[in-house]
Length: 102
Image (tube, rainbow, N blue to C red; front, top):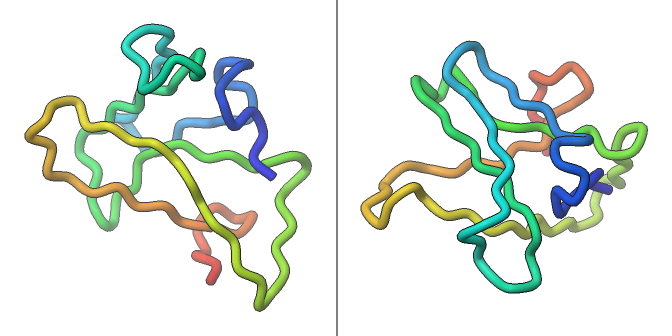
């Protein structure tokens, strides 16, 4: 479903969103494990409940979800320092980029 889920093709399939303050960088060192070759660093500033910032992935010509079926999101995330107290929120959005699905 997710295009380029391991970032092997850098940012192909991924797009940063959020007005001013969201930036991305591909990392190849300091990764979580020896199998991983690349990771995405997302830096956000001024994000809030009403001002979303992050990355999106539209999949391959969209993603097909079936009502009533269970889907599992798995990801690794690490804060920039051990004292990180922020939040990570994953949202499934409609094609308009605004409507929260589910």
